[in-house]
Length: 287
Image (tube, rainbow, N blue to C red):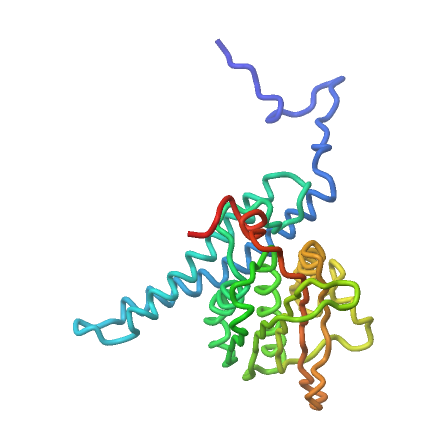
């Protein structure tokens, strides 16, 4: 007996109505997919580079154990493993629907991380690429701020460090990116008694775009890259806003090089109350 033909694989017959596109695929869903792809690409690129370097180091080790140390190899693999966990978080969050922004800690499956861990790992993810451009990376974290919950800010840090690195690369390479994390005060301490966190991502690259409003860089679609999609800073703005904070990109006040004025990405957000890391960062307390 002949099997009935799959309507999806045959042409439209006389009197039949052509199949309509899926009406549920709204512009919001498309934007969410684009943002997910952007964040996954950031993590995947660094993971591939770190795994590749670890494999090469293992292959280059001689019979006597010469070559890159096992501790360095383990660090690269740990970096890639952590990035894969963050990717799983993002995919899980994207499958929960549009009720929470991409990267929301309310949707994370992995244990919560501190802002110190987030900053350190973001730097490690891009370190192989930084070495290619001869860019030095540094993390300066006040001891009192290291253990503060990162909440949804890991993608913000990774985007910021990568953007700083690329800004130096477009200026010819050879430079320095510094991530500084410290405690701070609320924008209006008289009205807000909460303790805040301040994060500066500082570079000596090409600086913010000239002739545009300062906040234009945070608009979806705005980019100065030849192949950029203009999503990274837009996602960062949304996540910082979700955390109740502010984000801005400014020229460095301490540099007077018109070709490479450098930039400071400043992120400020209120510290979560005690125990909130167990609620907003994952399913249970850290082990």
